[in-house]
Length: 360
Ligand code: NAD
Image (cartoon, rainbow, N blue to C red; front, top):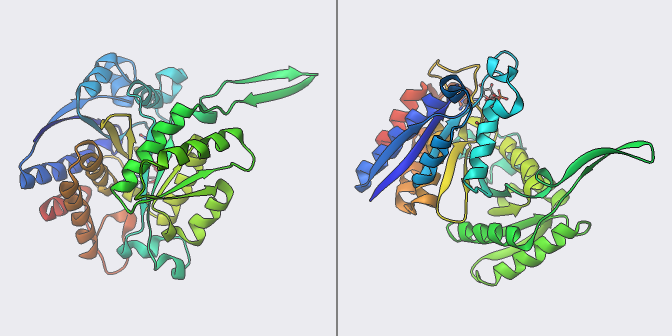
C-alpha cells in the first residue's frame, strides 16, 4: 500500500525523535511491502521564524491532503525564548490548537502502559506494579468546560467568574463510537467516566454511551465516577482497558495515568476525527533542556508511529511489529538516559531508533 504522511518535526527535540520514528516506519514499510511518502511541514517556533506565524494555511491544507500527520513537539523555553514575547495568538502553542481545530480532532487517545522492564520507574507499590497495566484514556478534546462560554463580572458588587460546561448528544455519541471501535481492537472493555451523581452533562453522557454500547455487544461497558476513578488508577490500574471521558476529566486523569508509568519519554498519543485520519505525537513537550544533544528518548515518537499504523492505516500486524520491537529492545537492556537504570546499556536517541528499526 502507498500512504502519504504529513510530518511536522517541530522544535527542540522534535526533529531528533521524529527522524527515529520515520526510520522505524520505513523499516515496517520495507518488511510489509508498503511505501510511505513524507511531506515535511513547519509548525510552532520554526514556522514563526520562517513565516512570522506558528501555522500557515498552506500547512493546514497539506495536513488535510495527507492520510495522517506525524508530529514531534513544538515550543521552546517559555522564559527565555523570543517566541514567548509575542502576542498569545502568534506563539508556538497557538499553532497546535489551531491545527487540532482545523482538522476536527475531537478524540485524544493516550495509552498508558507499564513495561515489565521499566517497573522500577513506576511510582506505585510493588504489589500493584507487578501486575502491570495497559490502559488507554480517550479524552473528548473539543467540547466541555474548556470550550464553553466564560466571563467574569460583578454580580451584586461581588466579582464572579462563570465557566459553562455543555455537551450535546452528537458530541458524546461520536466519541463513544470511537471508544467502542478502539476497544474492539484491544481487550473489549470500556469504562465510561463521569460525575452522573451531580452533573446533567454526565447524565446525558451516560445515556448516550449506553445507547452506543448496544451496537457493540462484544464489549463490556462499565460506568465509573471520576473521583473514584482517580483513586482506582493508583489502587488497581490493571482493571482498565479503554477509559472514555469528557475533556476536563480526561485532562486530569490522563496526566495521573501517565505519571504512574513513571516515564514521559515512553508515552505516545493520537488525536482522531470522524474518519480514519489522525494526528500522532508524543505526550511530552519539546524538552529544550536536552535538544540537539542526541540524548532524547525517541520511544514515545516511535510508538506514536505505531498508533498511526494501527488507527489511520488499519495495519495491525505492522503496528504489532513496531510495538514488539520496542519491547524487545527494552528486554535486551538498552536505555536512553531518562530511563537508564543499573546494569543496562545507555544509548543515544539515534542508536535507540536504529536498534528498534532493526528488530521490526
Ligand atoms: P517537556 O515535556 O518538554 O519536558 C519536561 C521534562 O521531561 C524535561 O526535563 C525534559 O528533558 C524531559 N523530557 C521530555 N520528553 C523527553 C524525551 N523524549 N526524552 C527524554 N526526556 C524528555 O515539558 P516542558 O519543559 O514543560 O515544556 C517545554 C516546551 O514544550 C514548552 O514550550 C511547552 O509549551 C512545550 N510543550 C509542547 C507540547 C506539544 O508539542 N504537544 C506538549 C507539552 C509541552
